[in-house]
Length: 85
Image 1: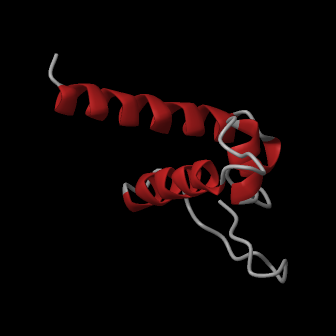
Image 2: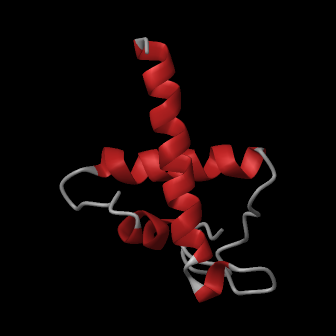
């Protein structure tokens, strides 16, 4: 397996991991209130106070999944413009 293919496989695994986190949270289902992206990152193990890059990585994965039409992004409903999915 070449490096490009390994990278693609890792991205797919990360997407699947984030989707599993969403599916396991009661507020992330259809007709639910939504879950903050930082909560998704925390539950996925992609949030650390010392490493903002991991939080951004989770945010980018969520954007990618959103573009594929798998998830919906919601307004933060006045929560300091925090995004919900």
